[in-house]
Image (cartoon, rainbow, N blue to C red):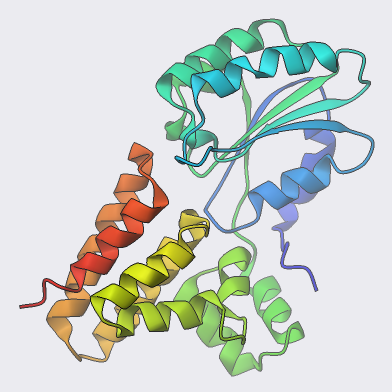
Length: 266
């Protein structure tokens, strides 16, 4: 069963997005914004997708490359430009993007996907129509968790501990030893060298989804009152790196920062 669970409010969005213009789709991390947008433009649409590079940023050069792509697809009847994690656009890239928007082809829909509106320049926001994606309803998520094999008590516990974000829940609901939850148990339970090894494995994960899961895991350990100082250090580090994400630092640095926090428990 799909983990693309949407609030009923979103049902009217596809017809509104499949038209000429610039649109910002925003809402909490992990609720399926990107998958939803790709499903909206799945059939009979040409798509140009822009995602952050290996340094987790979208550069001005990447935006400049968009212009010849648009010219090449000028004869397309239906064209969508999807900018995923648009908060990773550098300031220069956002300004370059504004110039690109000055003369949009009539066949073009531009969609910027972000967690928070204030991550984009006011000049971009003023040129765009915004669509808020609410978190899915509690009863819909519980029903989905039961459908994938959890009993009602387990489903309620998962939702309470991790919040109403299907993408996040799908990761931690996996039973396999290679699941994110299993790796987090190994990460926080191991020596420093092991934590650094696992941070390499985790660096390909979407940090917008992973960091809240790490924070929930650490807070659960704090409630158990064991090695309190170490878990407080982890919590402080994770809260700090959530802020660091906005500085476009690379995933490996962020995860290593958390790994090192466990060494300062004296």
